Image 1 (cartoon, rainbow, N blue to C red):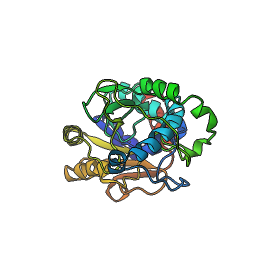
Image 2 (image 1 turned 90 degrees about the horizontal axis):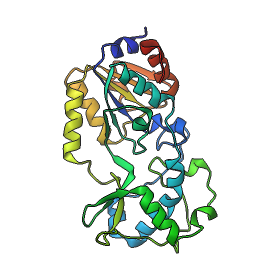
Image 3 (image 1 turned 180 degrees about the horizontal axis):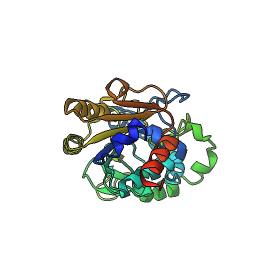
Length: 273
């Protein structure tokens, strides 16, 4: 066994994952090697400007069809296999695509929310994204069909690069007419405190923290690595490209999440999912 596999074999593993884990499912990341420069919409822009919301929903309406069609890859399946073997206890993911759950992982914390849900900023009602997609499709017939964008133009949050969004009709909450927002944490918005505290407890109780597919550029995920180090929890990192977890890693593997995690799962469980 490698030193990483020896640590993972202890069990009690908490996995902290990022966008690099979903790239093999056709969902690009923000900061991986070769990723185009992206400027995601901030919470402040979304809430203060009707025009910004029109631009967001016009672009997201196109991207949602491709996001909804994405499936788990070998990395997701490997973590699920490690979970079934009793080695990975929990997954804390910065992704909003729910592919860990689709792969069969059972204790998943969607740190930044789920793109498959929509929340009303007025009354707080939650509703399925698919329902909103149907409403927008009826009011904007042929919109998606007019747009032919390569997969590289999709962002991790389902947005796409699209310059002309004039004329796109946006709808409000069916209950109160309020502003609808995907139930995800935008840049400039805080992760709910209770969710953060729950993740801290998971990390503190872990035997190993496995960090996979994230540069940890933003504090939202990096704080959990800092907490692991503070509590002397060993940290195993696998990532393609630079990561701010490198200085804290007991074991650092530079490579793609799918082949590395699948190899570890094969060694430790005899299965990759």
